[in-house]
Image 1 (cartoon, helix red, strand yellow):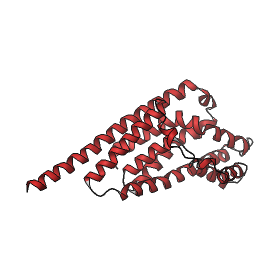
Image 2: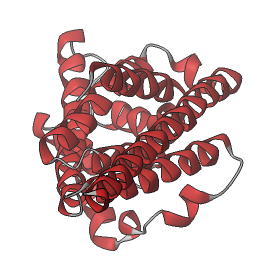
Image 3: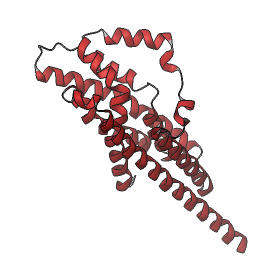
Image 4: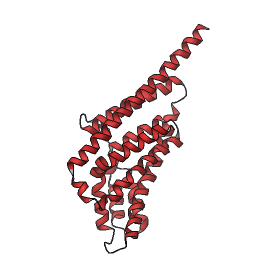
Length: 237
């Protein structure tokens, strides 16, 4: 992948984590911090717990990225197919950005009900009340499966790479870029209540998502233009 694309992913994920992610998952972080972490334990022990939770999320995101990258690669076999895939991905990104802004309900419409299943709920509750170190990692993995507009956006980006390796990389970079905000949530509790700050971060990241979507649409158009040029040259011969 190009360096500029990775920097874009880091920027969007980092900004979004202080707005969207804290709003969506902050309650889970505060809940496990209260139920699972002994306030009398050392700072090192608490830090390990938070990092295990975050790495659990990153692990799930990476697996999802590989899956979506593979799915994207299945239909990528020509400039025309590449162009169509990128156009669809770009349009979905623009819609995702507008949805994050609250302009439309695109993300709400495509959210699945996996997290509402009894099996998931019971497993989540059991892990939430466990005190073992592994339970923090498992909780993070489960958290990574929750319906989330930001995850959907990066899953679309992973699919547009048409590669399981690059798809996994996209989602891994996304997950790692959200760790600072989620890790520091316990020390920045006031930020989780600062609605105006969260709204500003969400607005910035949403705008970046829309711009990246437009850039992806342009790349799709470029692929289609090259495909058309190739066809024209072949007919000319």
